[in-house]
Length: 136
Image 1 (cartoon, rainbow, N blue to C red):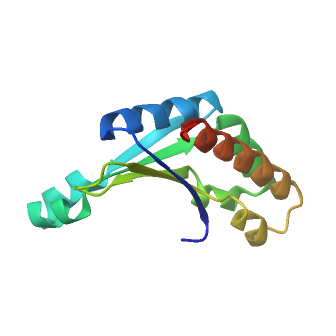
Image 2 (image 1 turned 90 degrees about the vertical axis):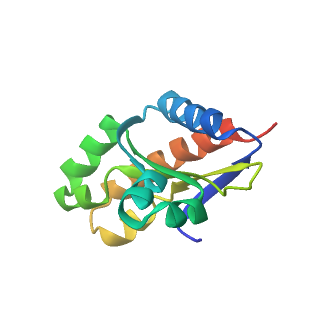
């Protein structure tokens, strides 16, 4: 999917989620919210829907300094915050995929030049987090 950057890692589910949180924290991101999509599907649509999806969690990552800069430049950008990250794994998979949003579309949505700089900084940090997760 365009609009995201991804890395696939040979980690167990719990370890991949933990390492994703740690890699984001190393880049100044905290987790404001976390959506367990599998659990939500199970509760709302039944076990069959959840099982078909596999493990899937969406941590809502936020770098407070970047968010403050973005909202100061253009308050409407709050609709795009936090930066969503996806950690997903099919039920029979041996690897876990981590995807992060590409913040560059913010630049196209805003007329403020400062937004480009903020998106570039956020993108660099998200890329660094993904790179830290990549197998060496």
